[in-house]
Image (tube, rainbow, N blue to C red):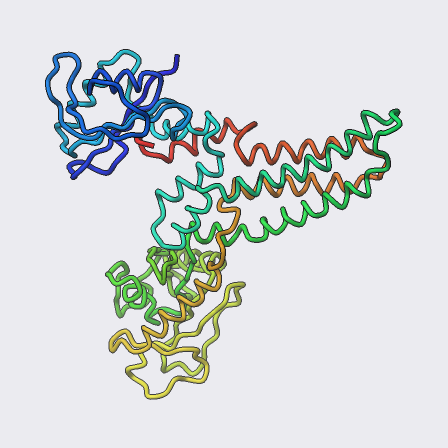
Length: 435
């Protein structure tokens, strides 16, 4: 018999209310032993909670019982909602630990049981992990969609489309000698698979946006030494994270800070000034700057307003040219897209608005289906095997069927039903004890 597990499912102690979650075959017995009486499923009861070893009062609070399979984990579940006292929770934990077959849950064990009992697809598990980690409105919206089964529902549709095509194919292979069996089905199968292939490819094309929402829109601050990059960095994130000095070459490494801009996660990177240098340490910083520029979604190239020209390095990302120290000039130089002054604050608000627009243009829209690299790899593999299936000649039905079985395995791996034991531990370890 599987152990009954327990853990704190609410926030840090002390707090107003602490929720202790219990799941497993002894959940109802524990409710009766600790609180007395019979408990109707899904009805809260205000009870005295006592240590069954000595009948001493631990606390008073709400007790809720959820009968399997109508619970989060699919098992009998119990919640004690008591005062968020460290001492009170510790006493309850000690009493629970003394129950035979009852132990503290491991990180992610509740949600692992929900997955094992088919209450959640693996994509929904990943969505819940993202929901817990969400720091911005966009991340929260995307995680809610994934946790709610957005990709799981679409994968079920893909599976149904695949099965419709596969069943036609197998009917001709297995019952070719039967008079009423379908024949010459490949043209119809190709049409069905073509629609499925388009849907898979569309999901893959939108995958980068999903990963960007999770990881953040990357902005790199670049330019020559003393252009004002570190000062701008501190102004954007509203705290001193980068050293500001009149001496050239102060920044020797890439400094990254994440902040919320218009509901989107934005990562801004202050970089070493680009110039030829004989200093080996500064040269390393310059090389790291160039690598950062190629990772960025947007580059802000800073140049002193007194400069006669601005020549950013050639990179793939969009570049916005900023004229700095505008408090020392009256007109925006012809090479600049926007002018700013850290000293006077001019141009900062328009710059923030522009950056928010750039982030929104890249990251906004309906939540994408794919939100991480694991999901993308599964769907890309399914698309490849599907394309291979469609490339066979019409008479090679067995080869087509074999490739379609591979597509089915890819979709199964996406949902976490086969072939994923090597990744499950990593995924579930992201969760805290009460999850």
